[in-house]
Image (cartoon, rainbow over all chains, first blue to last red; front, side, top):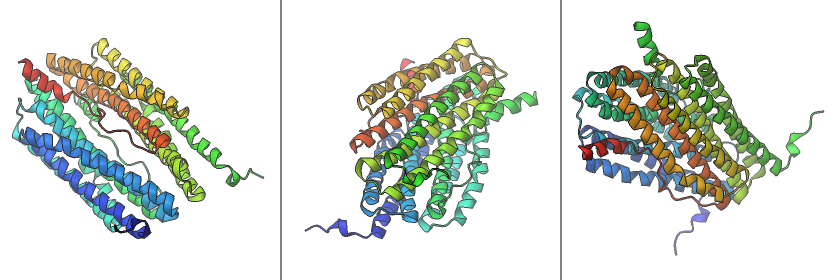
Length: 240
Length: 240
């Protein structure tokens, strides 16, 4: 006879959601690393692997959603218990989108294989991915330990991500202006950089979900949420 | 004495969520139209308005979330009733992100004001916005009338959006290659096009949320979800 899972305690059910989220977080981070490596090393086999890997996150998000709705219907939780479940669904949605970013980056690998750009550019892209993945890891650690203090550190590092993205953006524009043959590849690399930047946004969303779970209140929305490269044109204008 | 809202029926509470979502949908669509107009007409005042308008969607999403959690805690709904509420939260999250797209587009207006591009390009951008906003409108109408048939039509039009985006992408690359002075503006316009394309993704997400509400099952995830411009490089390679 199989174990009767319907008698599992509520805590065990929450533990199930948490374990799935931890798995999604590790998986999504590895996807991003591999996607960036595929772009940097022209590794189209690795790119294909990342693209097919994305299905795992889609399925796991769905499992978390189905389980969450089942727990709510069965347990009829209130207050923090209910927030734990709603929060888990939100975090799963963000991690699924981090996986989409990995898939998007991997898809660009094929488009840029013909036109190598300077090594410094690829190093920049890798460092940027490392920075945002650290952000993601910290926020997932904060979630695992239900630590509100750790969130603040993460949120304050948004500016670092913005600065690095803007710097990469400018560098890519320079290469495009130097030689029109760089334009196609650099455009795809721009979108890769944008995808990496968005991982930082998802980390911030997860921090907000954790804050909501623990306090029942929402963080203020006046944080920087979009890239600041729209200022690049304006800056250049004043420099003229 | 004020009316005692705590005795409102469950149907009235669901109606509240629906009305808020309809309002978000109209507001988000208007934001996109205005943002694109701001870019097309170099209208920086309109751009500023759009950027500050975004707060309304952030706040309304929060209201929907808070109300949803309160309804779940109070009514302890099951089956389709519970799915209605979870679905409303998902749709609100997508509409909030459509607003973010509008804000992102509006922010680019300042960066491209100095370097006018050919009128055909702006027309292309506006037609593309019209196409994705029609998609969004139809899916919101489908939600309002709880019509599953109308979803299929929406999902099948994803390819039209992909084709139009790829065409805009190619056109922008051409202008960049023709004259390096176009590069900065065209890069920002590329991101505008990308943001418009993502509205189509959000429309698809809303269609999936509606399917989930009405059936309790998930649509298959093998739909096209990302842009296909990554093939541009690959195509060009084979053309050489």
